[in-house]
Image 1 (cartoon, rainbow, N blue to C red):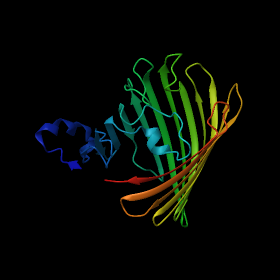
Image 2 (image 1 turned 90 degrees about the vertical axis):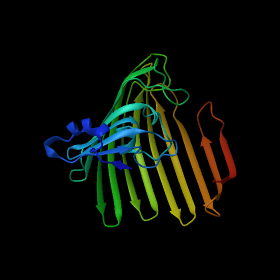
Image 3 (image 1 turned 180 degrees about the vertical axis):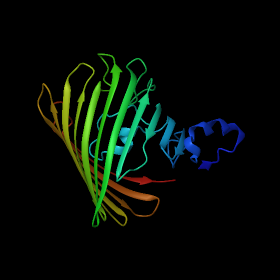
Length: 254
């Protein structure tokens, strides 16, 4: 939803429109099921976001393989800047002064000053859309923290053709205790009509430890717009894993 800066309460934001460039103020950009709120300013020299939004690294890299610890979460307040697309390149950077939260989100005692940056290049070759991306992050964390890595990087690529998408990336992160972990990820997704199928795999190589694998297969079918049948297989070859887990269920959307 867009609002003009002509409103009196937003008049002060006009200083962000340099060289007489037009600016748009956006609140809760897009449609988020968890009701994330942030302020975005679009001008000729790029886009500035302040509030609860995805980080530049998560948005531009957007790896679709097995998730890994990559940032402070979408509900954490941050400042992000994106450059305008130039010859297919997009650049962005985010700063999170003090992550807050619980569960899968960082605690303020365990991480501060999280800085993330990413670059993405998109190329259209015939009917295939190709995307190359890279990102990095660095944070100040406690030595016993397990919620955020001290620093990390990721490089990846994506190929999309009609209903098929293929993703791949290489990641490395340095944990709070200084141990580095590298992982190779791949994902294949197919969607046709009411059916979607995805296959994902990760090979993890700890600096001082045995390699392990994680494999996921998900199948979903929409019987009606509200009824969905799902099945997935989760295989983990780690030393302390549950082995193979198969789930079958149905989902009703209200």
